Length: 363
Image 1 (cartoon, helix red, strand yellow):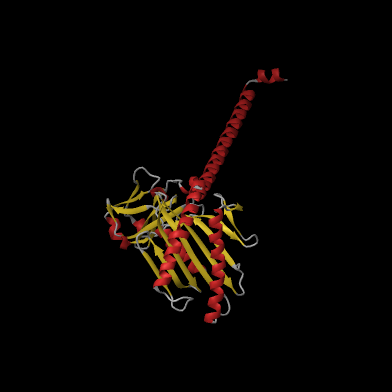
Image 2: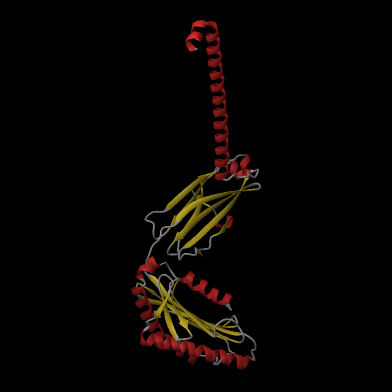
């Protein structure tokens, strides 16, 4: 269930172009569940680009707002038409779930899922999509890119795929659902523009790790937004073939930002050549391409694992050495002082014994 929904999420994230290009999207991800499970009977979230802006609250039967900080707020204002469309999605999905259970004799936990949404470019509609699945199997979908309309369906569902149904779906979306989706999208863009339009510069680094027989060189970019970034690892100024690299997937950073890394494994022979490796990043937040370089230095440390000692341990050892040296020096100083005092006392005794007048005066 969740795996299929995550697949949908990955699909629309890959299709969504960066916010800086003027292309934005609104997606509704919904699931209806029947059977004994810890999940709610119906779940629905609204995403503006890659940011969740709303969720369905079953106790209130309303779509509630999610603020920029992730806090749940008041009801999300979708307008009368938008509210009607979402209520229709909820009603229709429950009907489709019951129909599937009855016609396919499904028992136990049954999950029906839907992904629907639209995209705009410079506030003009360019794309809309609808996908529906039952127990992880896609059963119906369509895509409309303003010039081409494609519709697919499974014959075992309610209606056979024919010209009449295709025409009906096309008219319904182009004349009703798409205009409503675009209007909601534009309203949300105006409300969340500071969050969606933000640009956060990436932190770019070259990381190296010693391994048996060589080393790993990682080109890493973290804490950037929007998620679209061009990250390249170069060897002596030339891009490394992608087939030689591992990684490369853009992942959430856990703080609303993103991270991506690409790793190259080099052997001792390549290290001996002392290539220069450069991590280059191009991002909307950068005026120019950001580059960070590292030059390989071959030594035994690349072939023999080296046990690294924490800096704190080194400082502690140094402090102990200094204290012992200071105490030894102080002990020597005290010993010299005592010997000097004893010698002075012996000199005074000898002088007193040699001068009787001094003894009489003393008496």
